[in-house]
Image (tube, rainbow, N blue to C red; front, side, top):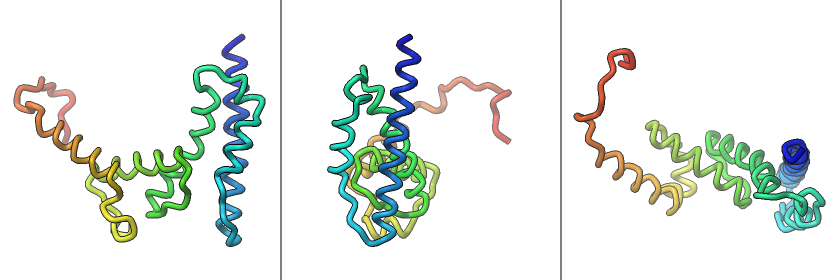
Length: 145
């Protein structure tokens, strides 16, 4: 029974996030000012958020915002200051940077992304440099090429 209830909570959270994203995009498109405080008020007043256990509602709500942030990062945009959006944006930028891709528009507009991403990139590169690649197991089946 709890899994069914959690499924309902996740569904309601995603629907609320999609409604908030639609509102945000409409505000942006028509020159309005998007205010996430209104969305947070909706979240606090949500029956499903109050009944949620173990952050089920929060995680499901953050999903669509994170996906939008990732898509915007690929386009070189950063449109909202919603925490889940920014997390998705940062994750996508770090992923792209490790694959050797850097969007010049993002760097020009935001500098080398921001302190969080820059530090994550430096730390991860340092950890990769510390690996002993020569002693790693070699499997002929997994060989590239």
